[in-house]
Image (cartoon, rainbow, N blue to C red; front, side, top):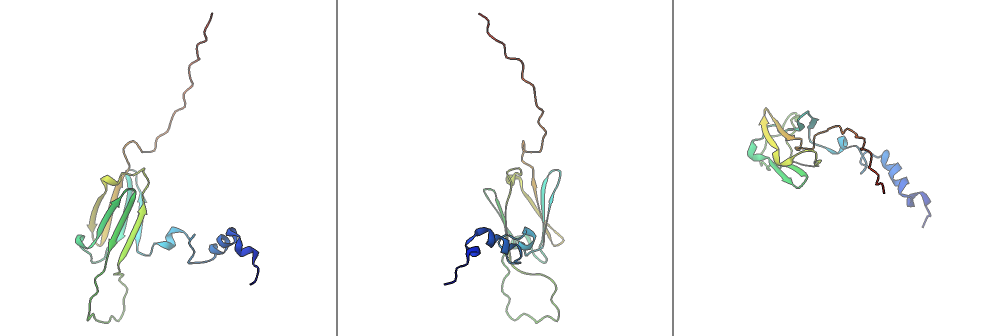
Length: 145
């Protein structure tokens, strides 16, 4: 057995993961395999998810606590023609995000327009960004005897 002191160090594993494209520490943009755009708007957050050729009944949107999960299971079609070129992504997807309490998942709205599934989640009431003013306390009265 070869003694490898650096492999016992968790920081060495993290350092190697920085150069590994399949790392557990990669940026989120490398983890999402389905085309998704996410925008923070003045009213909340908006997700735009590619849903080429899908109907509203094909997609499941599930909110559980602070998690948002969007799934589509592509049916298996037998005797399908072999394409000469295949450029349209028609695959199953299972996307899950943990949504900040800053946004109100109970008010989520969804629409399907021109191949895009659009989800809007408004900012939770009372959770919008606000600036707090610092006040100066009044002098504390002292007791006199």
